Length: 427
Ligand SMILES: *[C@@H]1O[C@H](CO)[C@@H](O)[C@H](O)[C@H]1NC(C)=O
Ligand SMILES: *[C@@H]1O[C@H](CO)[C@@H](O)[C@H](O)[C@H]1NC(C)=O
Ligand SMILES: [Zn+2]
Image (cartoon, rainbow, N blue to C red; front, side):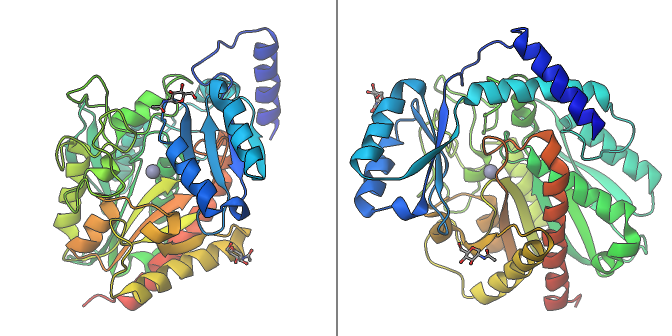
């Protein structure tokens, strides 16, 4: 713990010395609006307002009785507060200066890199680069040649290698069932690759406790789907909130939402055809090499795949199909049963209260062209988007919270995997 005190002292020092420079989020505030406040007319007004993307960003909408969190541009805050007052809506300000929080985090992350250089293992002390993560899984494959296998499955737009790690128990039995996990679809959701790393560590280094998870199942993990975006968010506080890929579109805007780019109900509800929007579906389905790689992975494991799990943040949600429509699959009970196993395990372990439900109605918006629907449609009987908990200003839990969140996440994933193994035994 002493390390944290030193870091805190150092960062205070650098700020009082005026070393921080302002960034594009200077003066932005995040408002939290109580779930109780959502009258229909206010919700409609709010929905119209937040379409103005230069001034508003909805970090988290109303879902499962949870409050909504909205980031607002400094020039719009007076209007926004006035609107809430006129509608008798209760709100809290959960961050008074997003720019300051982000620049402090940036400084801290820089220092942590110095303090904890890569040494062959990845702990929970800090966030890692895509290169470090690839190096780590390569090192694991060298250390455990009979249990761990790497495969280069593609390249990102900026030519970063996308590699999966396959983890087995080393008995060399072929054609086991498969659990497919990915992280890092959305650039700013750093806690997602961190959770994937922890999962990899557990399955590889802690075989004793997890032997049952590898008896009849192999695990295939792609820790960072969107490395270009992930690296871009690490450059500065200005770029920290980037969500999309980095491939330019025909307009002046860059990037596509890789989780709207899948060729299943592509570019329908909940996806945008404006290249400047954060949910831009892409010029065509699978325009993004990163999404195509995941689509190919899904197909290559569809016959053996029993669970597809994609890790995002935030919201403390386990969401199952469909995301493109408010309708639910015939097998909803199976999906719910597995998700509830994860929710209960987490609630018991830490008290974090995940919400379980079908994607569209739980988060109150459709998200067509997403990977979970795609995997479910391709034959994975269980397919989830797991939204990890809130941290920092929302998408950015500080490094000091990684340990707690990834351990809790692992408890949930292991519980869901155990239920899957029970429900879908190896034929
Ligand atoms: C967005 O909000 C700003 C500030 O209130 C306003 O000046 C601008 O006209 C709005 N743009 C649109 C497209 O509504
Ligand atoms: C978890 O959240 C749900 C929905 O908000 C609520 O009904 C339930 O009582 C909560 N459970 C616990 C143990 O806090
Ligand atoms: Zn996401």
